[in-house]
Length: 265
Image (cartoon, rainbow, N blue to C red; front, side, top):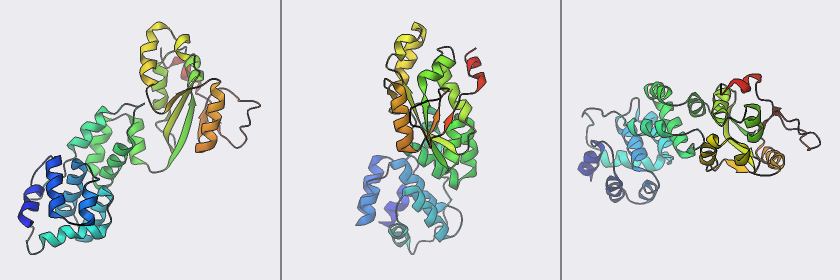
């Protein structure tokens, strides 16, 4: 069992097959928990536990955070390796796959699980954190590196009209909020149902793609859904509308910046 575990530990880019082998090595609860973790995250956690820096207790704590597994179950790994001096060369934690996935993320289609994995990786490696900053949008980096988050809901149609019906203004909005504190995540967008028809033909294909996001809604009147989301999620509203007589007491409404009209020029 020990030799098989060492064989897997010394391998890079774990596969589903490696995951199945680990389930055989470990019985009981840890085996069940392994089944719930993706191979790349499993590799990250196991290698941090065995090859990471610091004391066993510190490595155990970091691995537990990565794998979302109680520390008491991870001690089984130490038990399997007992009696074997771990003097072989330390293997670098494989962050490459996480970075590649991060590069592919799009602002309207952020993956919560991936964001959480990236946050954990940043917590255990400053080098990874620096590399991540170079490959993702500033907004994504802010979401990953800050734990204080606040939900936002955007009056999408109002933003488009304010920016001369330019769909790219929706992307510039993320530039605008990149330095907001606390970090705004998740961000919901609400558009009037006729949004596609009021846009120039050249803008329609991109709005069609954005409308596929699970955080983007079509609703008329849009104001009703915007306020409903803001109340349910305790979210900040971004809009130039005043929402008079809409019962928004206690809600915060933030106008778009004056330069919004220049975002697409």
